[in-house]
Amino acid sequence: MNRPTRKQIILTIAGIIIIGAIIYSFLPGAVSVETATVTSDSLQVTIEEEGITHVEQQYIISSPAAAYVRRINMDAGDIVEKGDVLVRLEPPRSAILDERSRAEAEARVDAAEASLEQAETQAKQTISERNRVEGLAEAGSATRQQLEQARTDAAGAIAARNAARAELAAARAAVRPAAGGSGSLSAGQVLRAPVSGEVLAVHRKSEGSINAGEPLLEIGNTDSLEVRVDVLSEDAVRISPGMQVMLEQWGGETPLEATVSRVERQGATEISALGVEEQRVQVIAELKSPPESWTDLGSGYRVLAEFIIWEGDNILQVPTSALFRTEKGWALFVVEDGTASRREVKIGRQTGLAAQILEGISEGDQVIIHPGSEISEGVEVEAE
Image 1 (cartoon, rainbow, N blue to C red):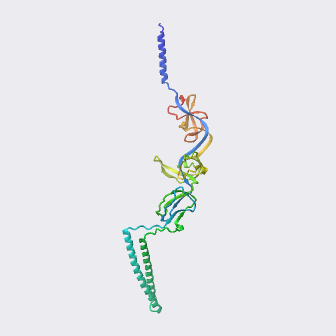
Image 2: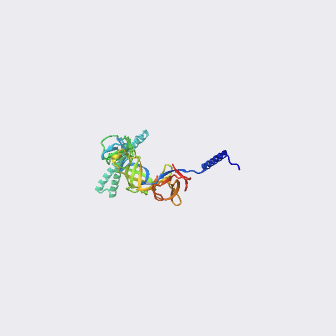
């Protein structure tokens, strides 16, 4: 039997090494994963929605009747005191007549003058006849029926004469141009500030005719602001008066504190930016931070309202991205001795980023976040 040569031994060993390397390259390696440590820390459950600041007591100044308004020499931001004159009103101006309308109006005047002349003549005759019949009645030469008829005819003629005079006055008034006088104004022709505050908006500055109820300007006290937030109806039932609210992204360096004062009981259907119908409820929050900390905040400003639904200290928690649904509830993967170990857990409160753990793991455990389909029980893992 021939003994292998040195060259054959070297080639055999090299072949074994190559085959082993090839086999090892096809063996599954450790899966690279991202992990997080289970900690005990404070936890807050919040609802975040955009809100708009609003003056608590806002007054819209409008005309109580159709009128002619003088130019309003005020701008947004002006300070007013209670009782200051804000708007001056005058009686409505007559319409300007074109040539045809003026001709028709003048014709009505002529007709009214003719009617008045006829009515005055008729009144004179009936009055004269009444006086004559009254004289005859005193002498016993006229019956009572004749006397009553004469008096009735005279009264009717006098009424017709008065109506003709009124008709003529109205016809002449339609022809005369409107008096534009700037004489003294009565108390009913000025609108005064109901409270001391600041002009929030001027809806109309130029003079001209206005209709009854037309808004002219708005005033209010910007030192007393509230925040109005439209929240989803399923979130509104979790919000109650007295709940703490933090206002962020309002332009200042630090968040502002507020308290829920009212939750409306009437919802409304709104269309979201994605075109989805949503039931929204308005929540009113009152600012509690000192006024000097938000002096530059005005009415109609955008804020981000964060309603604190629940909060606790020393709460065992994990990132919500580590959890996944199972038939029994919730589960996650814990890293043990370099392998993934599946654990069933019981969770409590949840936020957008963290979840409270009631059972299943302990503080200090390393959990896998964003576990993919390649992660299963016993798979070798390597933390990034």
